[in-house]
Amino acid sequence: MVKRVLLICTHNSARSQMAEGLVNHDLAGKVQAFSAGTEPSSVNPLAIVAMKELGIDISRQRSKSIEEFAGEKFDFVITLCDHAAESCPIFFGGTIRLHMGFPDPAAVPGSQEEKLAAFRKVRDQIRAQLGEFLSGQNL
Image 1 (cartoon, rainbow, N blue to C red):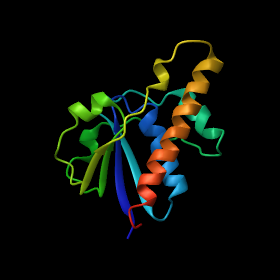
Image 2 (cartoon, rainbow, N blue to C red):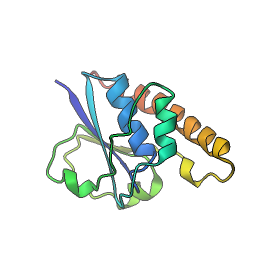
Image 3 (cartoon, one colour):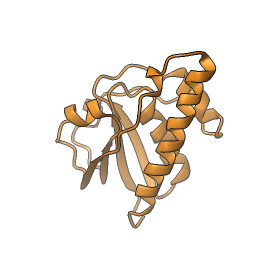
């Protein structure tokens, strides 16, 4: 049976969007990922660019509110930023709820290239840490 994971970040614009794309790509057929935000905005264009470099297209994903998933059951509910960890409601039916904090790449100052480098770094950290956790869950 395919496991379901909800990935939550404040704005559902970068970290959770990249995580959704990575999990659905890397663990296809084993895990189905969804992402949402406590204060949704829009998908950050640099997140789209960083993912496209890996051959993963998240350009059709959209920023969603956690309310869209009310009443749904998830095997895992994972917050990816500290603010979401503090403000995430407990109504999700996740058998495992945990926090994996990653720095906000959108908060990095500098040139476009410096900002994109931050997105790449966080993307790779998410892929490694989240992938390791989910792969170890008897999928």
